[in-house]
Length: 344
Image 1: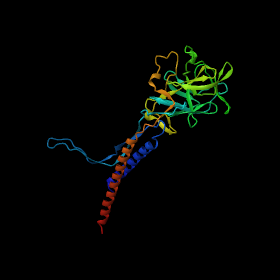
Image 2: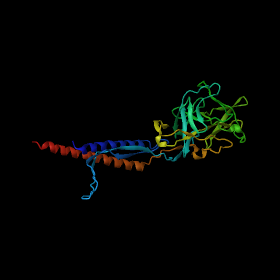
Image 3: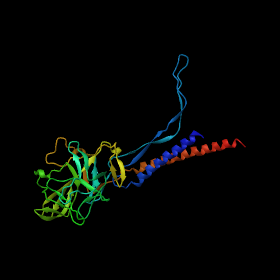
Image 4: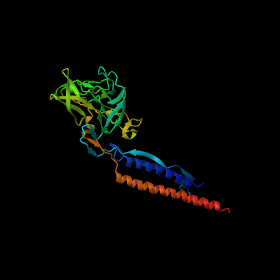
């Protein structure tokens, strides 16, 4: 058989995969927080027709002769640049303007009756996530919702993780029809150390209908989230309560993250461990890293960073390359037919 026949087949396979990548980008051009992917090619092994030789006193050096045997996929990379902000004016929509991922997860809430919860531990020295009873995933999709208990969730029911605020202890209810409770902590008392985030663990966040104040339940009229993820609630009696702080993480190598579907990522051996943004404190430490993370924008969502003009151009290039490789195969077929016809 002709080697060019197999080279053409490899070209068909590679360009078909490129079309798959382009098609997925176009299909997700309106997906919240979607990141564009691109594909690179590399040549396959080459056959040595003759070896190179060194020059001598009587003759010069001769280059080797190699014939390529096709193409293969070198890699599929992801463009993690921040997409445009789309305003929704919905108070449970959040966009990350810059570096950072939300931490979400599933798992049982241990010790919910007493308010004690393991959550996900945080190594306060390395600022990386540890173990716990919550299985974490990471997302740029900040379209969140509340359930009947007041849990802050993704559209698929994953719990949104964050810091508990000092004395604003979250008491999780075991009754699916009952609201979680949060102890009142005055958010206007700027000098109080009990407004500091509890940075040794991440817990599921909650925005209940009321806050426990002086043994009574005071209704939450409205809530707001600052650019650092700090959640405060305006109560019916005119006071302001601290409810928690939405956590964010970053990675040494975003390209090493593994897509899980549902706008979720998980870590891999090449992504590095998630580094947690420091929680808000009255006196930030010298190694506070919160300034290296993006701001949270409430009432907006990050749009896909797909450039449709670029995708249509890539689609044309891949289509023409596919057609050209198909032409190689049909040409080889004609040559083989001529060879067969030599014997009449």
